[in-house]
Image 1 (cartoon, rainbow, N blue to C red):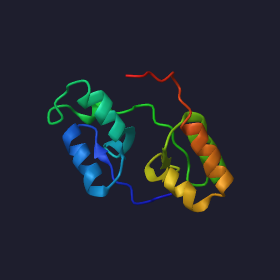
Image 2: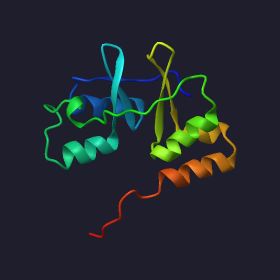
Image 3: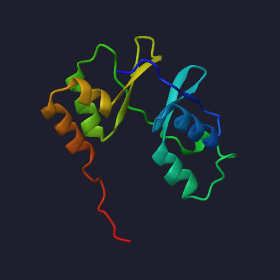
Image 4: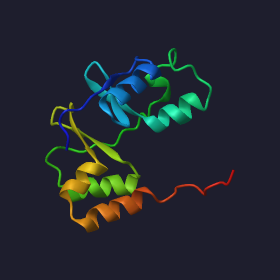
Length: 138
């Protein structure tokens, strides 16, 4: 896991979140309120829930477009279990909470690729990229 996690405040603007993503070269930021993890905002959340919906990035808060139901794991959890959680829930990033419930890291697909056998990362990726809904042609 990466233990140098950048976060964004729940009341920050979408524009600020996008700027932080650019500055730190990441596609997602855990969202915190008074030190507690309350959501996660991804570049896709910004594109779909803000830009495509015609919302103003400077006046729309992160709270309005973030994903609130964040699935997490613990630092002592086996990497295979974390990988399975990512696969089953089709998520690319998994926040890590310590025994006090505080954010202490995040696991990404890249982290799994660096440490896991090929079959593990292949299984996780195939589970994540399976479409949930039928694709539409435009």
